[in-house]
Image (cartoon, rainbow, N blue to C red; front, side, top):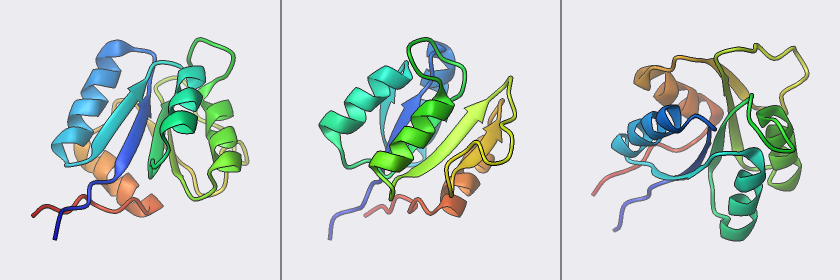
Length: 127
């Protein structure tokens, strides 16, 4: 039987941080797409579909912050898991959509993996 590799979308405007997150998650066996703004992320989510989770920074250029994206993604795709990341902000209670998790930067690989498991993203299986 083939292996199952969950698809994740990383949304981060800082190219180096985005690259680091994509590498970290790819190394763990996930299929990872990326977007540099919430607006771009909504296009990717709407056109492509099939994402198990979205990991988004809060502070981004464009018409919407990562918090806006998180809440809109929850409304449109309620089964999608959401992880919100920031090095600057700590969202107040009730700001994140139900079931979403917040992580402060910098992120470690073990913390990222543990958080994805806790929100219910299946670990990638290998052959």
